[in-house]
Length: 260
Image 1 (tube, rainbow, N blue to C red):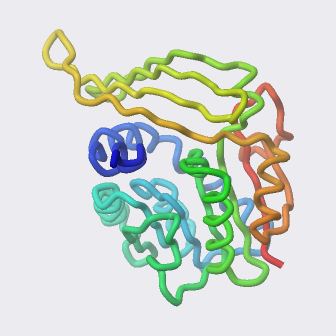
Image 2 (cartoon, rainbow, N blue to C red):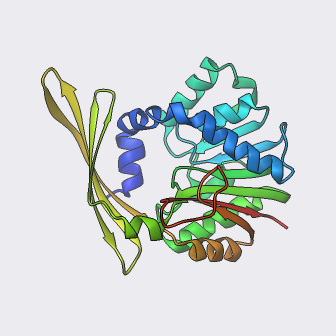
């Protein structure tokens, strides 16, 4: 049986994906401050315990810890979790962070007996599987959240991405060149892509890996419905952490829901 693409990218090729995430470290502090603003507005203040679902290398968890939150990051990749712990030590926030290897689909098993004031999910890390699995993940996160706690989701906006669809993309991160070849299925709202990683060696590049991705993207009304079906109460949606209204000119969404 072939492995799911998440295992291919986050387990087999974790070191390549790590380079991509580290290329985003520069913007993580501003994003974490945006998350903290939403947490504070909902009454989740510094000192609260936050679950960072699919935390990657912990780039948001570390900056939330610097703002005084206790953050538990969960990720399926042992290599990314290891790097998150290294970064936490480098930023002197080991006492306010904890990083655990675990599958989002079985998050309660990774965190037995734990309870959180809020859950965050960043960088379009919902939609890896199917809609029923996404509902299950949201429901299990709700079970781990105290009454009055919130969920902050930062993700891609299906309508804008489809409207402005780019079938090709090229990104340079350090010595890596990442080529994106994409197609969008309007019937299923799934974005299918091949990520090809090339590494610069001297004056040329050599192939490191090619990974096929298959990601479910959601419209705003679909996300609202998904959260409600999972037992959350929808609160608000924004285009970004500047709290601008959702727009077809912006390909991101920030969703806030709470547990009543």
